[in-house]
Amino acid sequence: MRASFFVTCLVDAFFPEVAESAVRVLERHGVAVDVPPEQTCCGQPAYNSGYRKEAMAAAKGVLRAFADSEAVVVPSGSCAAMIRREYLRLMADEPDWREKAEALAAKTYEFSEYLVHVVGADAGAASFPARAAVHLSCHMTRGLGVRDEPRRLLERVEGLELVPFSGADDCCGFGGTFAVKMPALSAAMADEKIGRLEEAGADVLIGGDMGCLWHLAGRLRRLNKPVRVLHLAQVLDGAGSGSEGAPGAGEGREGLAADQGQGTGSSEDEGRAMSPTDGAPRATSPAEGVQAEMSPADAADGARRTSPPAKRVGRTADEPEGDADANER
Image 1 (cartoon, helix red, strand yellow):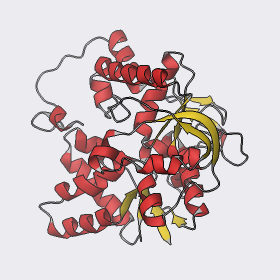
Image 2 (spheres, rainbow, N blue to C red):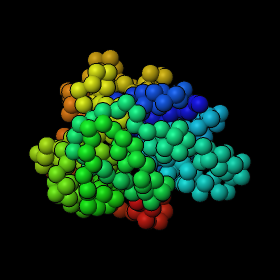
Image 3 (cartoon, rainbow, N blue to C red):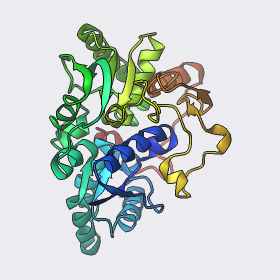
């Protein structure tokens, strides 16, 4: 059984250890994994902001990169939904590319979905003693219909107690550029989620989308809440549980795409994670989980408070017509 791994931008740039954990889990279950070096962003940021031309260019790059793959595994419900659903809309007027988009959509899987429905895997040898809550991201549940798969895998992890989490599938408030355009609302949504997390009594939050986890980790750190945040792949890999060979979030700078010649990290940055506020690397330990000095919403809100308002006169030359926010999600 063979699968190509789609690293995603956030994972490659900020959380390469998540990709490493995911690949180890797949290989442990007998999957031969390759990482096409030609892969790029799926195009979702441009698409959700109304830049269809730029999104289409990115999408065609992805279609070319994974054309010969037997299957494609994505550690993000958001990016997987973009490939499976939105590529078909983007290529609606180009029959040849539409056919390629349909072929890729049919063989693309979110990480937990692939493990449960294709590999038929359980957590196997994973051990992770903790009280954990599971965040079910919007694109994963509503876009892909993937809801029970993460819990099915986590229920087999030795020592892991899954606590009831009210509003587990409520939006965390990230929403990509939404967190930058509407930081106060974005932060308020995260705070509501964190309040319910505290009520659940969890000491670990587990999810399958790094955008959500980045956002929530930043708010937790800003609010001085001692809750660790981990991707599902890290838990199944034993990351941060004290087992050797299982680095936690923040350890390792160059992602899998970097190993294939795509990344920009230097050897001096290894063992450090990026702060989303200014891009400066900061040291972390395997036990810390996802690291963020603040959430994207916090960073945007702070910038707005310290910067003078920009004078806006009409549209810029490269701004799409219509209401770009209408395509936000």
